[in-house]
Length: 106
Image (cartoon, rainbow, N blue to C red):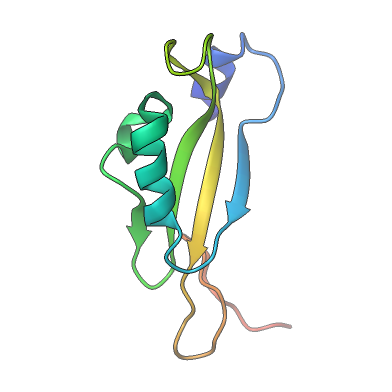
């Protein structure tokens, strides 16, 4: 959230999240790789794996940086990488992102 970002960056502006769309069945592989090589970069809410939003998308977030040396220091929680694996609606073939609802065009 925004408060968490500002606390991590001394109330300065910056980039909080960089998002990337990944292909089908890629999130689990990303999670396993981060768990093995960079477990300290996995935020608490993603320690068990990606979050699935039924019929919408699955999401994995990781911290983008360490505060110091790679693998030895704690994660810098100010910037996250968000990996999104889309689900395609069977009814209309459109992407349903978490929290987004389709509306007719005017």
